[in-house]
Length: 150
Length: 415
Image (cartoon, rainbow over all chains, first blue to last red; front, side, top):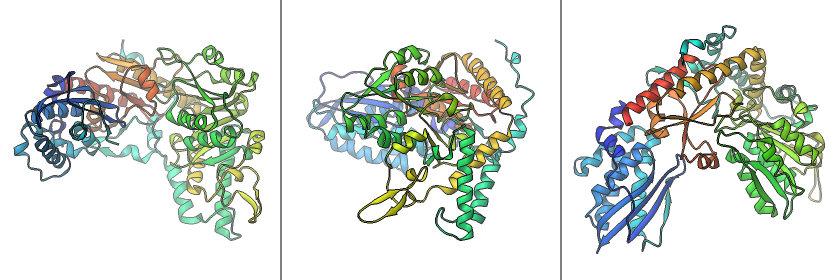
């Protein structure tokens, strides 16, 4: 396995210039993610329009995999319904952990498939998705749940 | 700065030493293993592997029980390991050497058996800012249980702990000073002689977490005059799951047992149990016999080396690493104390330590990345994590150069 399979150009790009990075006020939903093993922290804020994710932004600090994954995720779920976003979480989880994942319909997120060759790094890529799922299940932005990948 | 100025000392044959550690010959991702994670766990020399193997193949039985030959042999080997530890750290008596699982268990034992019955509301336990979680959490738990207060002595921006600052926090209520001999996250060597002296003058009991010190410097508990000293076998090139609590005999005598069970009793009836004498009082249940045998062999191995040359080599490795890594743009060394063990923690601007760890691993280089079980230290330096190269006497200048090249490659990839 070559390092360039893990750190594909698209991941390096989203790490250097994360999209949808910064605060979002006011937000309807929020959650915090923490990976105690490596210290990655992520705050996710979501603005809803009915059941649809109208805007989503993240803040925090993490490795290239975790930052790029969060950036790619915000791009992918914007405009999606809660159910669609949670369905995408399932498919991304399969992409990161199972060999025969349906990569074609995940778009740019498929660039993360190299992570499954690095078991220690799967949590880096999935932290933002666990945080998203937790935010989508919370009632309001005042009720900020915290998730941990440990 | 010029690389050619620093040379590996000729008196130390690092290639010969490397030949005694079988794992150093293996490949990782097609490259020869470059093991720079000795602060997390050291590798085992053949002598340790052989001693454990011989014990398992020829001598294993439970100790202190049977009259049969194997039990007697196993007992003799286990107790010989205790004697070796005793002379290694210059304890006065074999009763002062308690075998435990590791440093963490040793500290918990002192917290629960020594401190818990003595401490009450308003009493204080003094630690420092650079402690490993193993020397923070047991005291926090103790404070919860007793109403005592945890007092934390500061460090400065270089990661140094100044004796005056610690002494200033020693109060009439301070019952115990627990501090590292060497910081696992920064490499700082603490002024423990002075701290112990100051504590003793005030009647404060001292525990030294020696996990990172014992592999790098000679420890003489009698000369240090500490009350407790804890360390782990696996950082000393021995097996995991075995460690040592040294305790002053008079204190150990007064302490109640920590765990009850077999091997720690003289007699048991349903009305009353009489506890065994030291050290058995603190070794309930069947211990890690092969681990103790391996630890004894590791000490024997270390003592067979020219330790002055070993220390000099480690010192030159640290100097080389500090210079070589220090030249890299964006690299910040975290922990720049004057007196350091051969350990170097650092961050690289634009490269997260975890990504650096993966890039280095691809090249067969093992470094630790993360918070090093010292989150307050990370918080102090305002970094989420660092990369850490912890060097052993079997490491080489060439390996440090390989690490430097990996850091450069990571910079090229991410920046």
